[in-house]
Amino acid sequence: MDAILADVVVSMSEFKKNPAAVLRGANNRPVAVLNHNRAAFYMVEPPLFEALMEELADRELYRKVLRRMADKSKAVEVDIDSL
Image 1 (cartoon, rainbow, N blue to C red):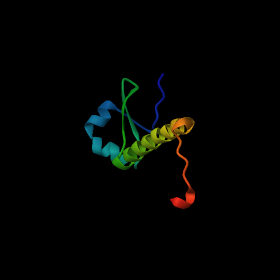
Image 2: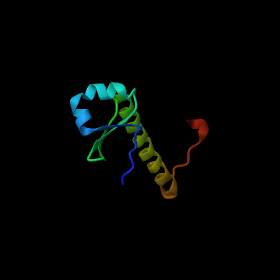
Image 3: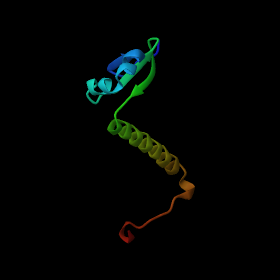
Image 4: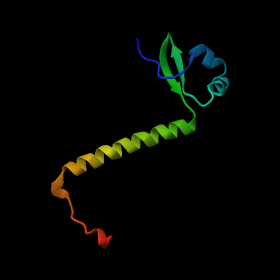
């Protein structure tokens, strides 16, 4: 069985009846919408989605920094006083 990654869970039929009410009832928390007892999708409010996208971008930037730090052949020496 797949893990449900939300505290608030509703069925697809409940969601279809009134999506806005489901979102209001979630109180800013993610909602897992189930279809046949499996997560069909997650519903999140825009601020949480934006935070998730920022976190993903930060993680990609972190990986890029690590790759570049590992490649010393392209390093440039810089005098801190000249910055």
